[in-house]
Length: 100
Image (tube, rainbow, N blue to C red; front, top):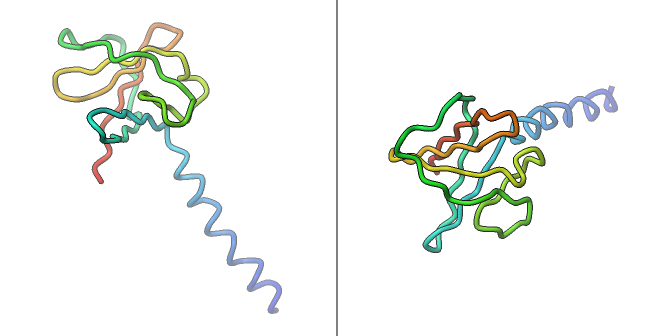
């Protein structure tokens, strides 16, 4: 019985780790690191969007992503502070700032 109790305790930690695997984009500017989480897919950029640069998988890069498929993609920011990652198919992944 002691073994089954010990075997059950690691299981709840596994889904928790999986939940942390969100699509994350880190933007470093003015000495701050801002974290964004991809929320939805959109077809077009807002008109007031400005190009920030390209995402990299190199830790410490000004525009960092933890997702391989976003590496090398252009990142745009609109006037309200949302980010847009241009995907290879021409659509955009919209990312929102994660509040600390």
